[in-house]
Length: 111
Length: 114
Image: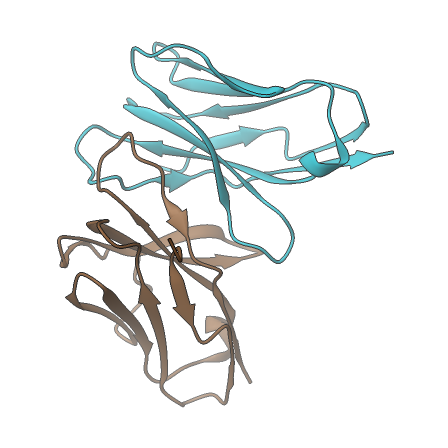
């Protein structure tokens, strides 16, 4: 089952904040976040593990609610370089690292 | 580290022709994944291997698609015969095979079938 991301698209001005959500109907072991710029490959941002803590990297952080099987990606004080499509990928416990990706959220940051 | 290497980067072929896409994973990674990305269907997992063994090929669209991993450093995805609806970007990714490990994507092969 593909995880569901919301919103489908976000338009921001530089400096504004955004939240992208990812929900799954299956029990999760981990949630992975990737960003893909137009014409490029997806690039890893961070992983959240079951029982783990909220992660952060610069002004991008994420949380994982195991009970609700949801994860949220927080982008603070957005920069032009944050523009792209954000994907969450979910994994069960014994999947050899197999991920099921959501449909993506398109983030556009304007000056 | 050179990262995941894919070839060719672009492929244009006519309907009915055979297409072979190639992938070299990152050295030391034991899981390899083939994805297809289109506007309509997003990023779909086609097949993945662990220690060169196919684990799950349920995403392979039909018998026209086949994938092999003869050794730890090389994999191929073959489409025979190709159809216009196969046009997409095909990504190969590798990881160390654990649920907590990140996947590293190759640059992709943009396939156009006319």
